[in-house]
Length: 320
Image (cartoon, rainbow, N blue to C red; front, side, top):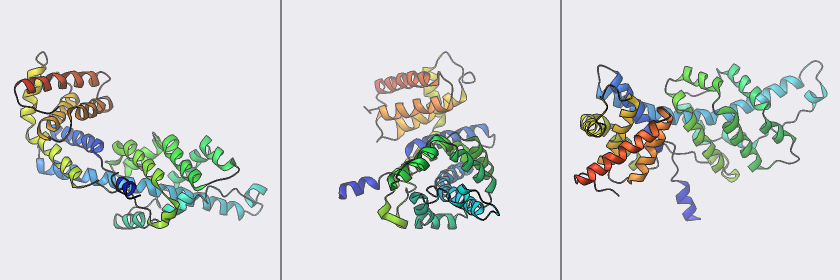
């Protein structure tokens, strides 16, 4: 049990995948800005990480917000002058959902929402539209029609809602972008952490269910700081190495996003010693597929491989 408890605490919200994508976004902003104020961009980088963690809580708060809207809708139906039989005797399984009720009372979530002034109260129209989408989904229909319903079923419904209805949802993405410019780019990855959180919930924890910490430990916070600093401060050195390998390309012809991905990858490969090469390769190939062109993954892989072999021959790199 103690082993499980230690593992349970190692999952964090701001992981290294998100950190790398944030460094890429901030490096892009830095090189697009003629002022190139390192201190200002570093401040914005730290703020963007904090805003990702804020979005994580805000999306968890969406669960009780939609549940409360559904409860109000049922109550309005019951209080009609001439309610239908269905309105008089509604199926209350959705509003009785134990995960939603548990989140509604969660101490950590309530504390964070209060300290950061987070609320869905001014988003009634969006909540209605999202509920209409949810209530029309196969997952909702199956859940409401099932003969019995366990706590695990309650969790599974919300996992499916986030995965199938709220992920890639234009209404939600637009509303979040209006609320905070940092949030739209983070939506997909933060939803994945919301889903992880839902899976980890235990009924016995009640209101004391722990949420994901911002960082696993100080090593990830330090990784974020080092990767950002190395990328910017040693940028000229990394670019010289890149251009020595990509000999047939002028700097202006090389896609900016590909150049930045290579630059950040070298910051990690050359100056952060504790990360294996294969991990760095895989992460930056994935980053290229996500943020650049279809062919960028192959380009990044081939270029990094050539650079690594060259650095090893020059005795400038000793990683395996």
